Length: 413
Image (cartoon, rainbow, N blue to C red; front, top):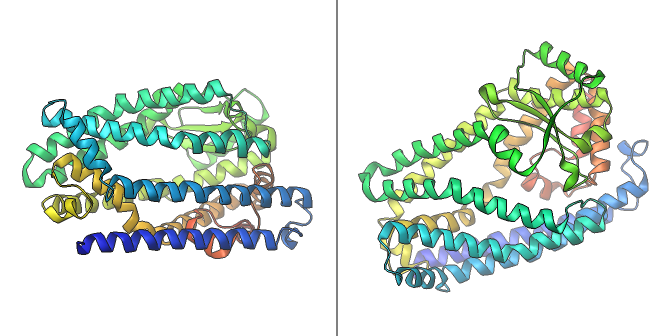
């Protein structure tokens, strides 16, 4: 057995052990605190809502173990089990040229993986979300979304795959730099096009109606010196009763989007506070910084791939005998998460720092109490647990736990 095979198995085992250990800690901590609402929320959240959030989070986390085990088993089947080699051999049997063979292998892998993932997605939507009263997705919408997503993936993905494989084959030793430039351009193009051309494929966007809410939001935008391409309401309620708000796009394509469910949950002061928080991300340039970090990491990843694809052991140690550029790309994409899993807490820490900064900005532009009320209402309506396990939360949660975030906002008053 090759040393890299051993390392891969060790890291995979470690990631599974850590995930299941954190999962069990999280469930135990939530259940241990299920009987009583935390002191900071006793006058804001009822015991019934607190217990619903505890049960909802526990149910989701128990179920998440099955996809985790499945993903681990499937990864081993594709690599050391010879699945990728089998798929590659069968598609090569069609006698296509190397470029079409590579594209076909990647698309076939994506199709098979998507089909195998469907039962988990369907169970989450139609069993768990339905059980707790959040699901509004019909079977028809679920199926249509699948086909829309597949068509969009083909339309955008095939040209990108073609360009990347062509660069890997034809652009010489510096292919990874050219590929990185293409990757940056592609991501920026998608970010620019998303609000205008992509998001409307799945949802209906309606301009926020004239009235007190629009006036309050417009005044906030003017105070903050922020311009956008419009303020829209998305029909999120056709899939879920969960509420949210977000910015999308950049440049002249920036859009502010509120879920219709959010407008029913929060009053105007609370909506203003939520929007002020989102504006805080822009004012502190969190979006730009995140994009820059992502591009830097992708450059390092492509440089590593450029070295690995010339090492025959990288293929053989992962169950592939016939080397190729497309197989190098597939293997790298599959195994990289195994080796970067333990970086989660670092990314979580950076994200939480941004959230605290955005909260502080919102407290200055609006009222900290309004944001606190908004967050409490969102925790209640979305059944977010108020008592996550600290270690689990530090590892996974991009936002600070509710008690920590509320306490931080209270200090801003």
